[in-house]
Length: 318
Length: 285
Image 1: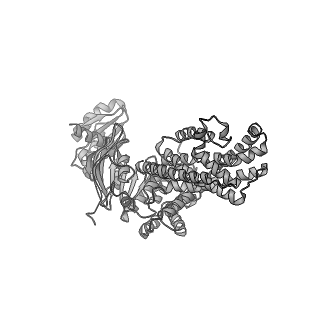
Image 2: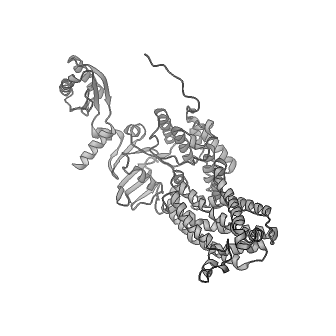
Image 3: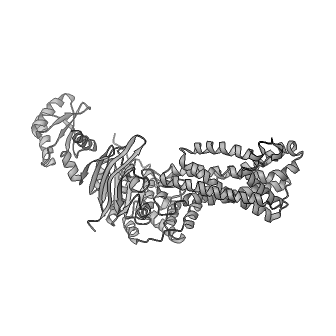
């Protein structure tokens, strides 16, 4: 089972008029894992997902979902996948319960079975109290959860989640993450698109970075991050006039590149790969303290998505 | 000053947490019922449409009030001028005005389809392993209920105003049945339009510019023999005039076989051509 492939896409292309939304995407998604598709707005993530979910016909290229061709045999694909779109795929005029009963009926459940399925799902997702309210009145987090509940009325072999946490508050986001982990834990493959490196890092076992319709990098989160750099130290100083001094101290202590930020008291040092980040951070702090530089804020972080993109696109251009 | 914690959130905004154990159990039930039949899926969509009427009852207002206004207006405004009296004119007008106001409301189906397609919910429907026409057929089935209700209300109002059908109850039921068959078939024009246009407003303006000439260039309000000679063959052969011939004949008890037959042929044609176009547009969306 470990070697089974959930999605295999080769050279997928989709144009909208002159715009090449997707420009030759290759993907290989192993079954039973979360696969992250990471990219900024307009990178072609949603278009890729819509093609794989049989909602859009590719202009060129081929793709199979568990061996079924998305163009030649879309109905076979539809029996195995569920989609939770970027905008809630629910009927806003109906109540939460009615949405789930309707969809259960459309999956072939009889009336009593559909009702109990809907009830159980609402309970599992903590939505029982809102079962009789129109979806219109739901908050973003409630909608998301109802949407995911609708996607697992029948446990799909493959679940597409298109930016499931965009626009959610941190608590709702954590709940959605918990749900995704639980779903994958029970054997469903998840293809997750996201704009956030942190989200992909938290959930995905492999990530494809996509930009202007192309996959520009692919690998495990660890591989991806180390390809960009080990991370960085961000500092905010107490006195603006100490910044130049701090820069000299840091670049001496870390033997690393130090950048001055737009914020006049902030600076960023890129850490060297292959060394312990915490050790480098501690060393940097003690050197700054010795030099008498007052630090208000100190953070040690992974490369941000911006940095990943910058690094990756620079490499493509070179 | 230290921050004081204020309790503003109520249970409303603080839903119970996700229950992982329950979720796991649900995921593992692995129950996979056989996909629903074409009819069962269309019926589920019809149920959805009825629920929408329940939650947004305003939408029924147009469909029920508009026909009554039409009936009252045309009878009392034009009756004297056209037929020399409102009583005779009502006898002539009622079947036609019923056709006109109900066929006009078929436009709403196209608008509903358009609204759906522009929302995420249609993505969900289109990834389900169901009969592709089911969402549209579901709408049309629920619409049959609305049309029947509109027909009953118009007929009741007509009776109060003095209308008497010579064809009796059987004639009236058959006439309304013919009207419903035609409406079901004709609606596919709008479902197609709803799928290929950008917004519901476009659906509205295009369909209105088709419906107005089509209903006025007909035998609904006046006898075509009063029109100029070159216009008569055009007016007499539109699908709406043929339908009105059929319905009026059935109401009057004159068994108008020609009107009925042509209407059924037109209906079959609409379903074949626009049903095909609708499904093709739906699959390409």
